[in-house]
Amino acid sequence: MAKTYAGGTPVKSGYYIDARSFAFANVARDGGALPGGAGNKFARVPTLVVMAAAPALGGLFVVALPFIGVGVVVKALLRAMAGGAKEVAATVATPAMPAGSTALTGKPPEEGATGKPAADEKAEALAKEIAAKRSEK
Image (cartoon, rainbow, N blue to C red):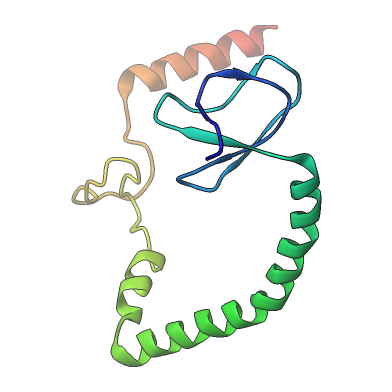
């Protein structure tokens, strides 16, 4: 049986594979730690095996990709015919924002909202004061 290493353990440089998720980890230098915690179990994979497997897995992907694409399209068509497209449409389509509504709070617009700021005596007085000081210069 191959020796396994727990995640976070310092190991020699090389390639390691997680036994549960089949995720690869590359440790660049001796003494580097494996990713994950103690629950992750890694096995060392010889470099020659990795070099031989890379083109084989790439070729398998190229051969399988058209079948995966056809399968996804067939599944989408079957869902559309069965009425499952409503779920997707509900997540994509958004209603138009009515004038005067607040986008972030989700509150409906107040009665008589025009989208223009409300008149404020203090703000108008401040604006007049600023305009007067600018005209003095």
